Amino acid sequence: KQEVTQIPAALSVPEGENLVLNCSFTDSAIYNLQWFRQDPGKGLTSLLLIQSSQREQTSGRLNASLDKSSGRSTLYIAASQPGDSATYLCAVETSGSRLTFGEGTQLTVNP
Amino acid sequence: KAGVTQTPRYLIKTRGQQVTLSCSPISGHRSVSWYQQTPGQGLQFLFEYFSETQRNKGNFPGRFSGRQFSNSRSEMNVSTLELGDSALYLCASSLEGKLTDTQYFGPGTRLTVL
Image (cartoon, rainbow over all chains, first blue to last red):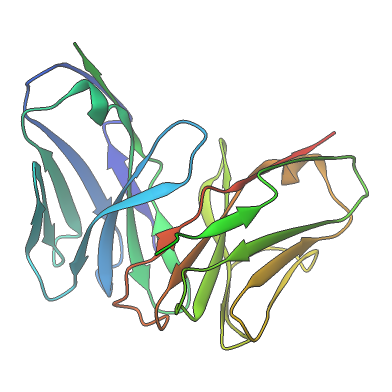
C-alpha cells in the first residue's frame, strides 16, 4: 500500500527566505507526482505535476524535483511571500487508487 | 473556462440521514474523482467515474456510492450518516482520466453530521 509522508508538518519563515518542502513515498511505481496548495477551508490548487519520466518542473518561483528510485520529491519556493502561506500537499498517482496524499506541510510566511 | 463546481458548499445533517453531493467538472472533462478530507485521516480517495462507469474505488464502506451522468456531472451519496462522515468532500476532474492527466479540484462540500 502506497504511503506518502511530508516533512516538516509545519514551517514558519520570514518573508524573502528560500525554503524546501519534502515528500517521500514508499512505492516507486508511480505515474506522476503532484504538488498542491490548499488555503484554509478551500479546495486544492494544482501547482506542479511531474510525470514519472521527468526529474523536475518549474513554475515561477516554484521548482519541484522527483527522484522516483529513492521515493523522494522536493518543492523549492524561492523568495517566499506572505501570500504563499497555505498548506502544501504532495500526492502520487498509482494505478487503481488515483491520488494518494501526504498529510501536508503548513507554511506560514511572516511579513 | 469555468472550473470544477460543487454544490452545496455546506451541509448539516443528523446521524442516520442520507446526503447527496453534486460535482460539475470542467467543460470537456470526462473523468471525475471524489476524495474525503478529515483532520484525522487526511485526504483519501473515494472513487472515480469515467464515461458513466465507476473505474476505481477506494477503501470505503458501501454506504458511500456515486454515479456519473452522460454530461459528466457526478453525484456522491452517503447513506445512514455517521458522526465520522463529517468531512470536506472534494471532487476533481480530468480530461480523459489518464494517469498522466492533471486533476483539477473543486472548492469542496463541507458536511457536518450531528
